[in-house]
Length: 405
Image 1: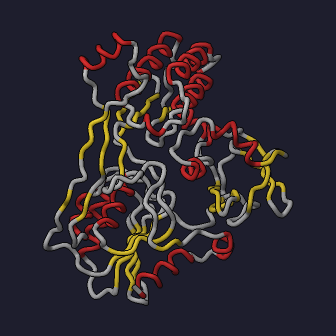
Image 2: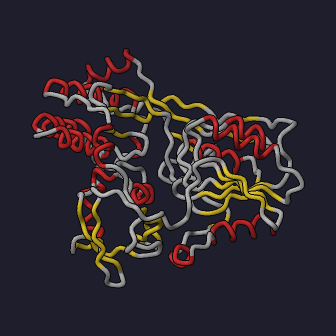
Image 3: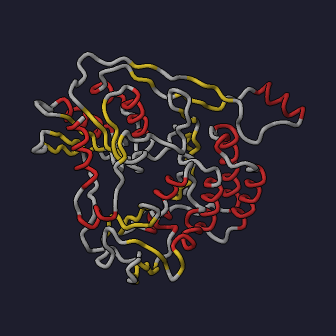
């Protein structure tokens, strides 16, 4: 593992000042902040914490809390060394029907479908408060999705209490040896030819062009199928897959309405003279929605999407356009609800970076997208019974829906 330099007090001040400048200039989500949010006061409080922090971790956590206060999924701070030191989490827990439920596990005593009710003898929600204040999201659902995904926010040792009375000790310092149980995650694009004539194409992400290229090849290679289902569950995005849209869309479709901060020096000067300069950007430039016409050689057969709360960012850009162009059913659970083309700042010597979302997107008709996401045409929630059985019921219900449509 690369060992990074720890920032001294001057470096900390520089990182903080750079963050202040970037947020003041580029942050596109002022309208999404809670009423009464005082950016200048919050920054001054953060700066005191950052400069007085006793060590690197305390500095990074203070900076994460500051960014999290902006409540945006594409605006955050990252410390690579903390991530490396903490390793990975041997389980996946998400909220299902209001209860923290184990979805995947590499711990022998912790099973998919188990419900977590307490940690270290405290009610689980109370125990998680200190974790969640470091994670900025635009909605409670997105915050729930991200809560258990950052191991450096968790203690190295703790004990999970389940709803059936078991106490399961967790030791994050010991790599798990158990195989993972629960719904599998695709590592590459997977093609499944089902006996019912449905072809399922699982796409794990759009953060590497190879995934989009493989998905396009998979679609173009399908012959004599009753339908194609693109399984985009847990696809956390990357770059918007315009090529895949061109390969499948058969009707014109609209993109998003985009709002991005616009700085006009003369206007700012006038505001400063009158003492009315806003703390965060409020002068916005809007564009869109653009309209894209279909390609004549696009795949013409029946299609549908399967999404969930982990379908995020560029994946949502894709799902939104798929739905606007009436290409087929969107099935599953609401998507993550955040996109934003972040402005990145990196501090390579320290292994630290941050990003600030530069655009706020809306549905083509102007409805709010941020914190809402793409809603499915047919809701197919993940259930505890499904996790216990080990059967991908979401997929089976989706298959019936598309073949019956």
